[in-house]
Length: 161
Image (cartoon, rainbow, N blue to C red; front, top):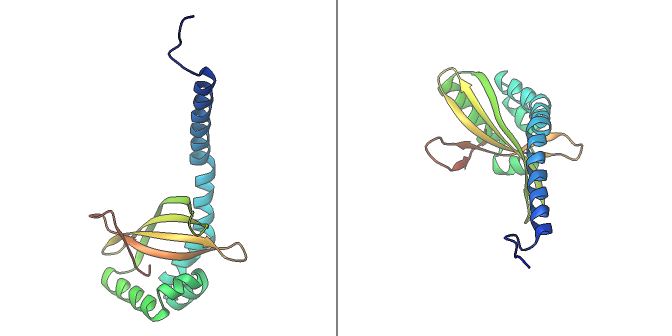
């Protein structure tokens, strides 16, 4: 009997179907799910968050749009100082571009979140900021962590953005 170069044709078919399914889900996620997630985060969280900051309502932005974990990492005095110094140095926020909003999961503590990257453009500077967003008890997205992504490094340092 002639030997086959594929020892188990059923296994090869199963692997091919799994690969096609993965590609199909990737296309679905990229065309359907990811844009809806970005739109939902922009409208329900980041639009009012940046509007509050731009209007000078720094304390309100910290209070309304961040989690208890974020508040522990970045107490109000540090948060307020960060934004006041940022606006003083860079001028007002003139544009923001949401470039990435991916769902993520930490296996160890079973934490689900969205990893969101923005480019914030100010009158005299710009920064790349990464946010981790979780849903609160009412199902509303809230900022749970933030940091600046430095373009010259692969590191993202925690900062109260």
